[in-house]
Image 1 (cartoon, helix red, strand yellow):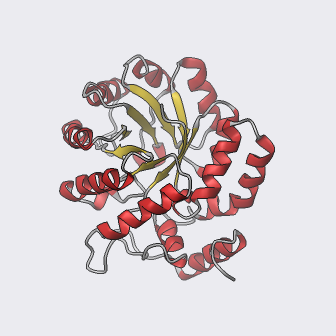
Image 2: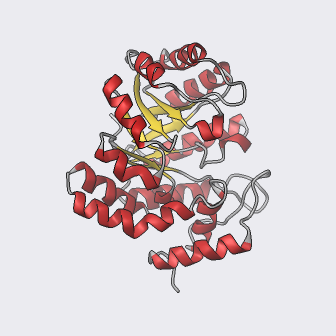
Length: 290
């Protein structure tokens, strides 16, 4: 259901701190033109923790409307409160999205039994669910056995693996039949080599064609071309995480003239030395002029 290259879309802000919905529509057009298979609005990269519920839902609505069925939409509607995740997901379903990205509940650190009940409650709404395993953000891992149990639900169809382990892909594939998307650009190629079906990418915000071409080459078994693109953009994949995501990718977007590097506290502008390093990498990749 969810195969290919999906962009974890940034949320652009105006100088007054409000969401820039006009710029957001422009970014959707750039992604579609870049060959991306789908968009993931209001995930981690979309700064979901600092958007209020009305803003959160409006971002999903605008992205879905702007995409107009040309690419798939996996709406970030997760929360550490099951009731909130259900509320967001109900609205997203009404907007006509193709699926929902459900992050592991953070801070309250539920047990594995609690995770099964949480994700199952969301899946019962009938929208295809992409589980989001990101223990570095949530301090709580979705165990492989838990994924296997959840995969029995007809609406739990995919997992975004952002735990930094290629081995997890093999373990999940051995345990159950569920699609897997890499949650780390630098691990997309090795994860696809052992059975992942694509990526939910940060780098594709600024290099959509390159990420799409890499994923499509790997999916077609053209490993030489996929490997070439992996190494060509590997420095970008890693340098977009030299500070907390989405700080670097928004800085990169600004350097490329795509969107201003504006954040909501507690996120703030990059340190000058890191910004210089990122600019050099963008130049090396041919994304900005030297």
